[in-house]
Amino acid sequence: MDFIEVKMEKQKHIALVAHDNMKRELIQWAEDNKEELKKHFLCGTGTTAKLISESIQLPVRAFKSGPLGGDQQLGARIAEGNIDLLIFFWDPLEAQPHDPDVKALLRIAVLYDIPVANNRATADFILSSPLLEGEYERHIMDFSKSIDKRTKDFLED
Image (cartoon, rainbow, N blue to C red; front, side, top):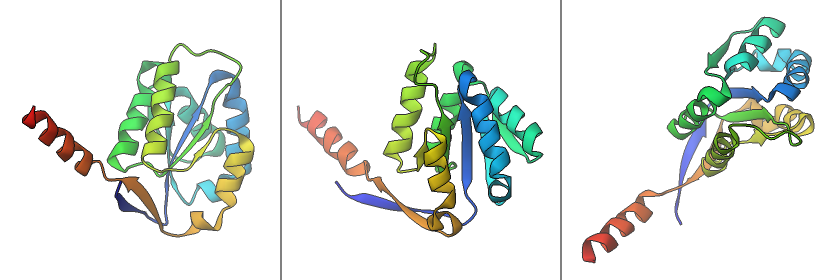
């Protein structure tokens, strides 16, 4: 399958998300990394965005709470090319009522080739990467050929 290259600008759009049991850990991580985070555009789901903004005194655009559609809003923005990086501290030991939404968000992030951190160690590695400091070309599958083929096959049936 062919790929389309999509450029991430130097200043990244970073989404911050955390399940309830992980919010304190994400807030602490954001406090520890405030100097790096202030170089970028931040957004997040509901309560998480508000708590981080209040904690680190930086603007964090808040979408809806995850269970109320926030995960889907972030997924749509990833598909639109408006989010470059996802920091999502999810709770692996607690079932979430919106698990299908979480899975969909993670699937979209992989499909659109954006870095995803699901824990502090990965978030630290991503934030300390020299790739964060400049432009970067993501490689996204070119689905137009697949759509064209499926349309052609359908019309031939």
